[in-house]
Image (cartoon, rainbow, N blue to C red; front, side):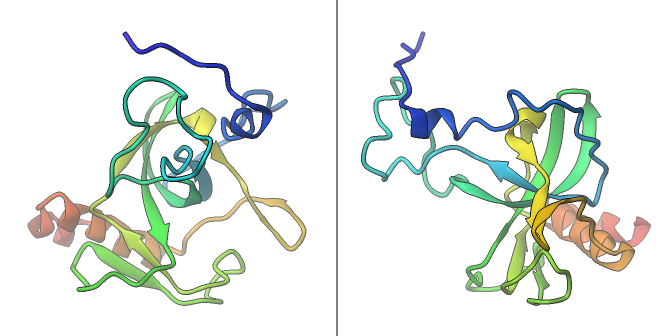
Length: 162
């Protein structure tokens, strides 16, 4: 069993939403921030616990994600976005150009092959136009995201049913 070590104040801040005074309502297609955890390459991160926090190419740091589904009250299935263009581009990548939405200031690519189940405690609303706001993809982008996720799962043939 891993031994839990004491966290400093900066690391405590990485665990989001523990004291949120309201219940965050989450729907499929919502774009949120997810705190995947600290970058293990960052000085001072270890020793949080024995064993690695993450191993490349797993997701690290705080990043935008899209909610794919909410299978149970405490869990969200999400797919992350990256501002680094994938090379080579694959069917499980979906491009969102900067400015299409007010919450995408940079070109972003969905990483449909990096689907993950996370605790709702890791999720929070985006801040844009100076305040926390609800953010969601258009129906067309949401459909394209779901097709990308299916491609990432090796199930592209099902995309015609979306």
